[in-house]
Image (cartoon, rainbow, N blue to C red; front, side):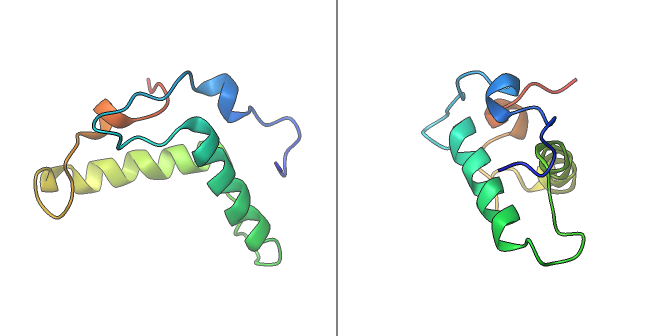
Length: 87
């Protein structure tokens, strides 16, 4: 359930999710998790997160953690498992 009815749905942004050893979540799974988060935080001020905000957070997270590749559970490079195209 999107807060912004004009928001682009996950299905229009993402094609079939690429997987490496089954590590990449499908678009439906990510959209459902985001909807669940937004439903659980309805009454928390400024907690709403749309898909674009989640994508930006994921890109920032990648930049901050890329040096840990091969350590601390980071087994895959983000560009290899990212479920959407990025400029």
